[in-house]
Image 1 (tube, helix red, strand yellow):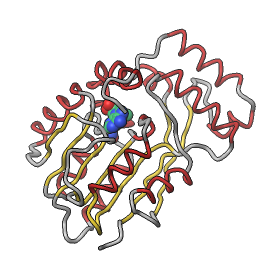
Image 2 (cartoon, protein in one colour):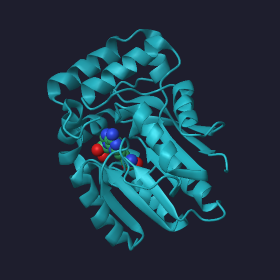
Image 3 (cartoon, helix red, strand yellow):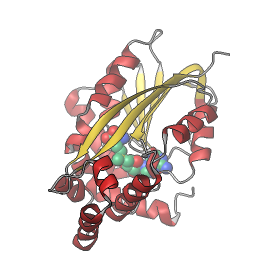
Image 4 (cartoon, protein in one colour):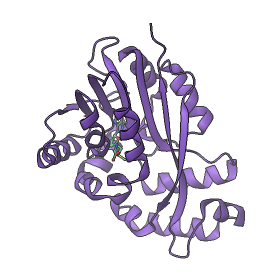
Length: 260
Ligand SMILES: C[S@@+](CC[C@H](N)C(=O)[O-])C[C@H]1O[C@@H](n2cnc3c(N)ncnc32)[C@H](O)[C@@H]1O
């Protein structure tokens, strides 16, 4: 995707002014997936020399992985997010976190030069997914690891349609949550054939979920109406609460590229 495409403009409009909110967001700053990601990477021998965090946002995944790698490069098209990463890395005393203004579709790294590619809650914003995973395949070294954390689209089409619709109403830079099969196909594209998967129930607290993206009140009201009026099977699958909070499945896919 061009760096000036209308969708990229929406990404900037959504994320640049919200960088500080992402640093403090409990959904992003905490969560069992971060700890599991860190454990998996810490168990690797040899220790990855160079890791990438694609769509790093305010840098939570980079901070979690930094102690277990030689260096990690936090990549994001939002300069405001990267400023958060730089200042928070300094606060935490992490001197092996670098930042790079860029995007997953065009990585300025040599072929087979990266030992670990990680990405968390970002790929559902990427429009050119095939290009991005081809690029990951290009930079990931044989034997290198790939870690993907994202929302897993519901298998039921009706539930999926409701979830994708409210996601887009809330955040116009949302593209699509993918199913387990779709994420796996993308990992295969990057050379990772048999990833493991771990899932978590993630509660999205309505008020902070809306506030984080500063969703206009009119759209927030439509989301509430959609959740309130959704068919019972959708409300049950998303476990919609009286306050509008609801639950999604987030997952961590983890695998290794075949050694040369
Ligand atoms: C929800 S935030 C990231 C959360 C962060 N990874 C974390 O764990 O807290 C999504 C990020 O993806 C970035 N993004 C959007 N499109 C991208 C692309 N094509 N390549 C890389 N990053 C992208 C946005 O700028 C934004 O900072």
